[in-house]
Length: 130
Image 1 (cartoon, rainbow, N blue to C red):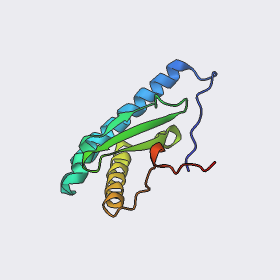
Image 2 (cartoon, one colour; image 1 turned 180 degrees about the horizontal axis):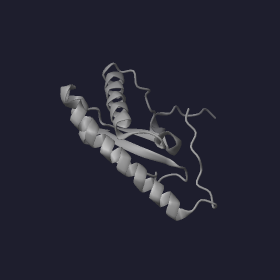
Image 3 (spheres, rainbow, N blue to C red; image 1 turned 90 degrees about the vertical axis):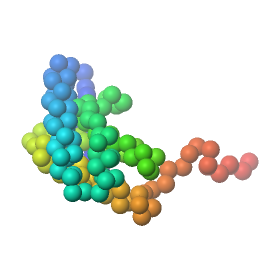
Image 4 (cartoon, rainbow, N blue to C red; image 1 turned 30 degrees about the horizontal axis):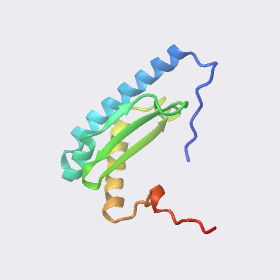
């Protein structure tokens, strides 16, 4: 399981913003490359890659990681890839493009074979006995 570095009070906000913008540009380039490379892949993989969006810094947490979001409308799901900044440091857009294609293909296969973990809604939990 990946660990993410926290953003601390010592971190320079300008440096954080610059790094986030650089990683967002890298992942956006990788998404465009993945869309081009996926020409021979099944249509569902191409459709899901087409919905991909990248954020250089997650707005939800106080940690140093990027987020790539895919919307799989056919399956009524959203898939997130959380990528720690330490993994983006010395990587290329081509490496991430290949990784994105593999991730989407694996998620499609897991969903098609009904191997994805089921999430339970709060209402479906059994009631406690008193």
